[in-house]
Amino acid sequence: MGARGPLPEASLAPAHLRIVSDSSLSPEKTAATAVKSARPVKPKSMPALASRMWDQIVEDLEDAGMIARCDAATLELALRHYALAVKASNTLNRASVIKRDDKNKREMRHPASQIFHAHSNAFMEYAKQMGLTFVSRARTPFGGQEGPTDGNNPLA
Image: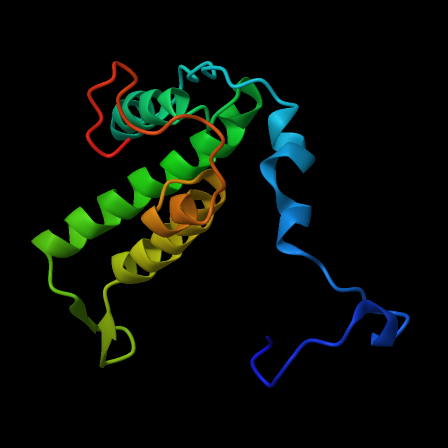
């Protein structure tokens, strides 16, 4: 049932539209299953904070089978945005968010607030794509076994 009533049958749908079933996007029918899950190589030139986050995130994604070697560049860019957002946030914590612009004789937002906003938004876009948010993981079909594999899962 659609939001405004029952969905039309496929034969009644306009020729340029097609009804997509939920099963058409199953994990068995995507390229995600064709790429082998493997730990990507961490770039040597990453900032210290991004490097520490890499180790934590890659371990978790690898355990879930959600990362491959080809994801290295995407994860690196995501974590570089994360590191810059944290750096801008730390700057804002030490300074006033509103600054006096003596040249134009007016109040203005601290430039770090725009840097924080831009880099945190960029990180969140990468995070959604890579399954780094609760919502993105909740929407990702999972074909593996959840929880402990030693028989100690009380919910199994």
